[in-house]
Length: 207
Image (cartoon, rainbow, N blue to C red):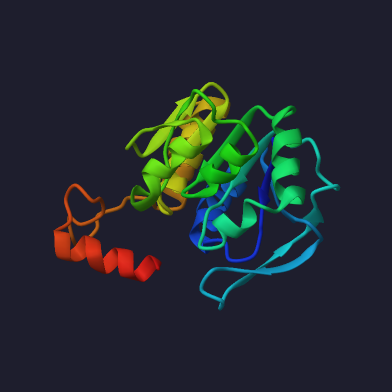
């Protein structure tokens, strides 16, 4: 299974690296970071750079695409090389997926009209601009389009894909191999459980 993860300026690192770690650990999966041109691309914190091993043109027909979000997503909506690659690659994929605001790029490619989809809680309603129905869920599956909520939910989404592709046994083995057994110290991981003060502080971090 050939997986492509597109990188663009100011993506969120965990959006890309979380699913990468899950999928790259699974037998039979080859994961490639792609970009407009092969080479380094820096994240939205400006301190972490991943290297795209291939260009969009090098990998036009992956089996799976995982589109990360990030503070650069809104600017990336006008990147026709990226959006066009998503639109064309979708014709060949078994699954077309996104993490966080990566769903906006699926929407810009015209792939979410009439579908339920999710993204980061702070921007969920913006999905309506792309003709999607916003859903506040961790992972949303609509046929071969799979959207994940904010950042860390990409790990859940990737495990969901593995279960669908190779069976729950494979997904469970990968989950154990990466010791994904989250037990956060605070019950503040969603807007439904966090205090108003915490929500405002989180929004400030995202601005």
